[in-house]
Image (cartoon, rainbow, N blue to C red):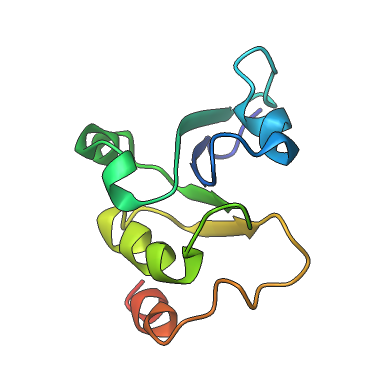
Length: 105
């Protein structure tokens, strides 16, 4: 049984093949997981997704300027509870705004 559905937004470039297990429409995500949308900036994610209550954000290093985009995505989608970064290092997501946004959660 599923404790909580994973409603996933993916902050990544569309052409990032390393994300294909998540983003390939022919692929199958685990039971209880659903990819809602892929984009590289908040305007790529339609406002209608707010009603889907996304709770997981998958972040890829292929997203340009991710340190600027991440706080904006978190502000737009306050229901995000989990941020998963594909790479081992997270220095590319660090910003002065990130602690401010995450502290409000």
